[in-house]
Image (cartoon, rainbow, N blue to C red; front, top):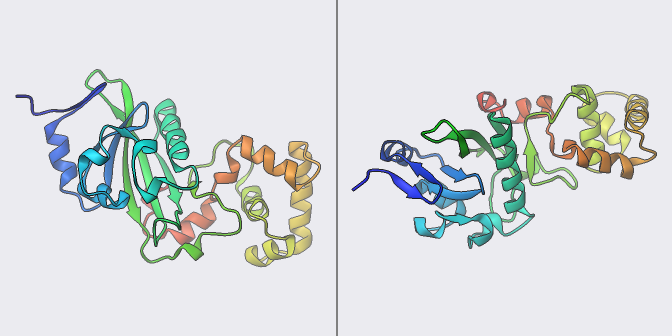
Length: 235
């Protein structure tokens, strides 16, 4: 009998499974279709499931769990998987799911390679931010899954800090108060951003940011402030 854990398309060694089973933190391995092929007990608890067969071998859309029932979570997580597999890079995400979790958490995903050296899926692990409440992160119409890595270099970090709050719906005076700058500075930055993106108003600017995935980016200044102790997770 083989010591490997076999799901169609992927094989996970018994040694790796035994190791991940020891962790108190949630761990999971997903294939290239975002199907969970392995989950430890801690990950089952995140999903609020009791049996591995309720999660393993299934897509998130097929799982009966409050963790994936709202806010298009299955689609968001599948998009993350595709990005990690394509880029072959470690990525970290701030997850805020107020309908199913009492605390926000950081999900880190790494490319998972099979025995042939092919990137066949992702390995994910979770750190729950128990020292923070959801109110520390939820601002306006904020997505439930936030990137902790900037999508590209189109915008500077300073631009991202200002537009982050504006995209969430805060007024210029409120953005200025949060960042400790003048309202005129915020307005000048936004006018420059409109020119840079060809936007005429905030709605069209939001659409531009959405197309480039900047509406999900949590600037480093905010993530390093809120996620102290987890800086090693932020790529």
